[in-house]
Every structure is written in C-alpha cells, then in structure tokens.
Image (cartoon, rainbow, N blue to C red):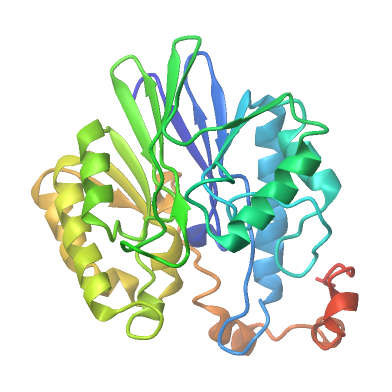
Length: 324
C-alpha cells in the first residue's frame, strides 16, 4: 500500500498475547488495541524471555503512543487495552502506563453499555471512569464512522468474540480507509469463526486484513471441534480475495499451527495472495514464546531469584517486578 503504513507492535508471533498495531496514513496515526499480557500455561509461569518480550512490547507501545493521534479499543480483555492498575505478573500495567498510552488522545472504544458481557462491562466502566481524567475525548465507537482529515475510521457493529453466541462477548472491528486503500483490524474474531463476521470483512474488499486466528489449543475442550472446522473454511474463503492477511494471535499459541492451517496457506498462494504472521510482516522470524514455554524452561532454566518470585503469595507477587 502506498498511503497506509502498518506496523505490528505486539503479537503472539512476537512473544506476547496482543494484537497491538500502529496504522499510519498520510494525515493520521492510529494506535489500535494497545494492550499486552502473558498468561499461565502448561502449569508453568511465563518464562523470563516472555516477560522480557512483554517489557519490550510496552516500550514500543509507549513510543508509538507519543506520535499517535487516536487510540482505538476493540474490547476490554487485557491483551487489547491497558488497565489503570498495577499488575506486574500478567499485564505489566499501572496507572502511569495507561496514561502514557491514552493521555491527551481521542479514544474510540467498545461501548460498555450494550453488546458486552458482565466482566467486560465492569472492566470497561472502570477504565473509562479513570481514563476520563486524562484523555482528550472518549467516544463509544460501535457501528460508527469518524472522518478525521482525509482518513476514515469505520467501526463495525459488535460481532461475536469467536463463534455465534460466544460467552466471551462481543468485539468491534476497525476499517481504516485513505483514498481507495483499506485495512481491516479484526481483533478476536477467532478465524473468523462466524460466517456473518466473514461476510462483513469481505464486504469491505480490503487490501490487508489483520485477523486473530482460531484457538487451536482449545479445540475439543473449550471450543467445539465443529467451530474450529468452520473457522478453517471461513479463513480459506477470506484469503482467496484478500491480498495480504496477517494471521496471528490465538492461533499462534499452538506449536503445530502451520501444519493445521496448511490449506489456508495453499489457498492464498493459489490466488496470488499472502498469509503472514505479524513478525514475518515486519521481516522478522516468528517467536511464539508461549507455545515454546516448556522447551524454554528446559533449555534456559530461570534463575533461583525468578523461581522464588514465582512462589510468592499472589497479592505480593502482583506488586513485585519479576527479576529477569
């Protein structure tokens, strides 16, 4: 694209849970979903390498926020926005961190009063209440369009966080358009799993789509196999017509994800299109540290100080920076 620049800042292929992206047009800079986290997995705390990646992601977000005009938030999971409280264990968040990202900015975010589940309603309300003291303006974005200079930001009506009827609630997708160029950031549509969500993406006829893939590691447990299969079909349909697809997030949490979605890569190539992880898009090797956690603990054993930190009482640990 000649008029829209995409810079992935934090994704699973970069070692953390996130889909944070800086989108720049000729006259506007948009910081999308500025959140990041690590999470428990394999009965192990995140490896020090994961915490280092999280710290690096936070640094990149702060630098991007310095030049961003607008911050957008698709939903209120902590890997998609930065909460206003201290948490050193998972999010690396603090009131100062939240202010450094949103302070003085126009914030366009998911509505907290409609199409929102209980946990996200609570999180969103608290975030908006505190952030309202330092943002320039806070707007609910669901289903709305904003023309800022020559750049248009269009937000979808709420779509499910995954399959139809998902208990995880709803998210809003973002279309950034400058002239005839279009980028779609889909957040946690998980595939997309929903045919309706797929249709909404294809209707835009985008040049590039950033999509959170399906959570393969939850197949057959928290996510029915039939839903995973439907998301495979939807993804194959999508890559036939989208020139560039950045496929990342949940799907990269499985070590063998490339094997499982081989047909998706083949379908894109057959139509002259590309499917890349966020790391690959910026010319780097994918480093999905969460999926590598067990091998990291074996090949790079954490220090005694770090292991001692992992055994602290939870409330004490949340206020103590992990010793890396």
